[in-house]
Length: 75
Ligand SMILES: [Zn+2]
Image (cartoon, rainbow, N blue to C red; front, side, top):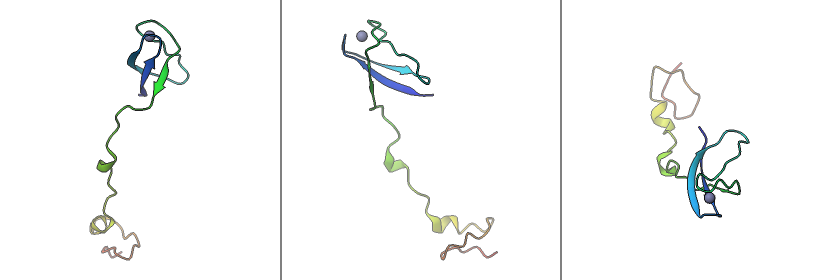
C-alpha cells in the first residue's frame, strides 16, 4: 500500500498517510489540505539489493543451460 509522509506547514505537523490514486490528504491536526508530500520515507537500503552472482546460479544443474560463457550446466 502506498504509505507517504506528509508535512503540514500550517501547524508544522508531520504525519504518515495511506494514499490511493488522487485521494486528498488533510492534516490530522488542523485539517488543512495544503500539505507537502515528503519523499524521504526510509526504504530498503540499496546495499541490501545485490545482484545474484550469475556464476553460482549457473552452477545449479537442475536448471537448463542459460548460454552464458561461465554456465556449467550442460543441456
Ligand atoms: Zn496541520
